[in-house]
Length: 388
Image (cartoon, rainbow, N blue to C red; front, side, top):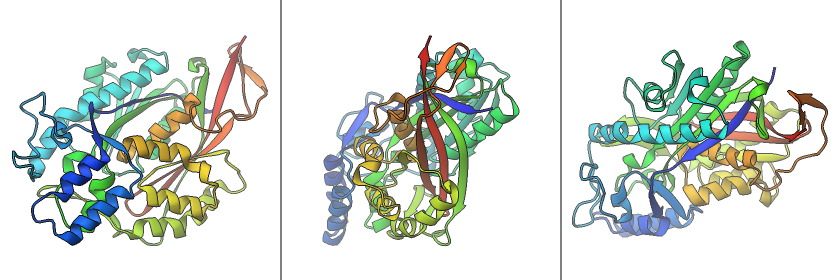
């Protein structure tokens, strides 16, 4: 029994940030000395990001439509430092609509109705509340009240792959299950002005966004294309437990993202991938863009051609690092056939419900990195069907 991703839906807040604008905003903050200004300029300019999205319109220089929006910039252009409680209250207000928008897009993309969903898996590390986003999705989308709900919280950027793995395990035990997996992150709620290099890097890459997937083992629900979930892997690196850390502070969540992270990934990635893939040769790569330097290290460590990570670099360029949601944005490009090299091999070896199925599709290796330092992996195959 093969479990498949039928569709992936995405959503971003309406406010779009130009990277140069945000860079100049942080450089202009009081108390930022020349050394910190140089660090900010270098981090933002080297990020390979053009645009990001945020739920906080003030970061773009706009006047918020909603006067109750948490203030983050004063009349003199200074970035404020709201309490963690204020930031989390904004998460409680802003995150559920983003969860719902991505989930609705995935449900419509799979051509199913909300009442067909049997399980919900939500993922987030940028806010906390109960009853949480899993409960809100049931209410906001009109899902059955009997839906089984699970939440993966505070797992970090790698969490979407464990979310898909959880869905696959559910489907392995229940062939009729239809699982909605939804990731939503509001990273910009935790921005702050700082001369600390780690905070500067965080402010230069993180963004807001949401993505959702419909996962099932029921072949009758497949459409024209889908992603088969072949297998998953997880590994802890020998070092890095102090280099990528996510904790709760008094003025927001504190992200430690040291300069060692790309170097650790570069040293460890070959061993982690070889243990996971064995003799399998993927046709394409979907790699979480923790930052440009992370992608560079993966590319070098795995000896990949420059074009291999174009899908990851494209999502980073247009959306930034949306933590857990990002890898689903990348996988969507493969599912939709818009990523480079998505045609795969042709030929069919069987039929499912009167549909000739392309059984020799494109194999995609997905990698994501989280606190620990943790490497999460998945091997997927893109399938297409020719209707009789």
